[in-house]
Every structure is written in structure tokens, then in C-alpha cells.
Image (cartoon, rainbow, N blue to C red):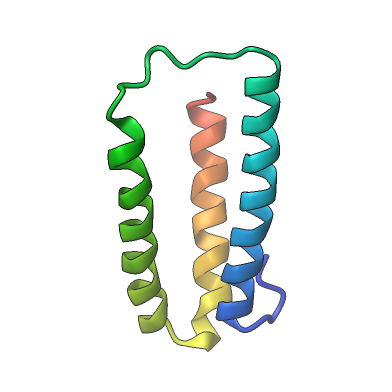
Length: 90
């Protein structure tokens, strides 16, 4: 959780960890021969800019959350994700 880190540090740290994990995972998928035929050919052209747009929107939302409430907001979202995974497992 956000163990009293400034929200900017928490977000950058979470992003860096996700980048490392996702890069490793995708590299492994491709090395092991996984193919993504169901992904539309235009997918990367749309999805990569969409992820940057999402990050920009998220930044503006996070900037509106005061530091004193940030940890509680993160905790609530983690709780909601946990409940979702219990009720609707992947």
C-alpha cells in the first residue's frame, strides 16, 4: 500500500514495477512462441496512445486527491479489486 509515501513516489514506483513485470512477461510469451492472432492489426496503433491518454487523465485525477486522503483512496481501490477477484475470478 502507499505506506506514507508521497503520492508521486508511490505512482512512479508502481509504474516502474509494472513496466519491469510486463516487459518480462511479454518477452517470455514471445520467446515461448505465443502468438496474438486475436489482437487486431491496428491494436498497437490504438492501444499505446490510449494508455498514454489514460495516464494523463489519471494524473489529473490524482492531483485532485489531497495527500492526506491518498492512502485511503488506494486502500479502497485495492479492496474493490480484491472483492471483484473473489466474486468474478479471471
